[in-house]
View 1 (cartoon, one colour):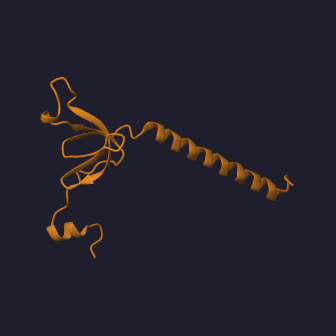
View 2: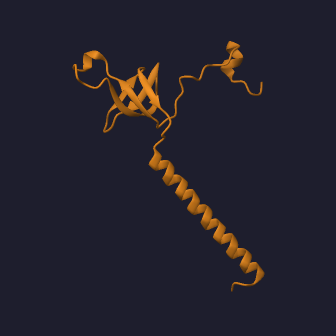
Length: 114
């Protein structure tokens, strides 16, 4: 084959656009059409991107509700901050545990531990 090229790129002769791809799990806002809101209602509903649909996105807005829409604004910066911190802390704990085990093994090889 051709390294570094997708089948679509080889067939079409140009690189495919990936501008529409977003981070799954990011915070987003789905536009609420005029016919579904009253004068003082919000113009957007907050949700979480859970996937893609034909010509649009699938957004979970809580409970059992998933909205399919093309009119979505994304906020990809804060990717579930509490989850990120928790994963980082767990990784640090594992790293510290491995480090202590390595120290114990070295000490055991030297004969300073029983």
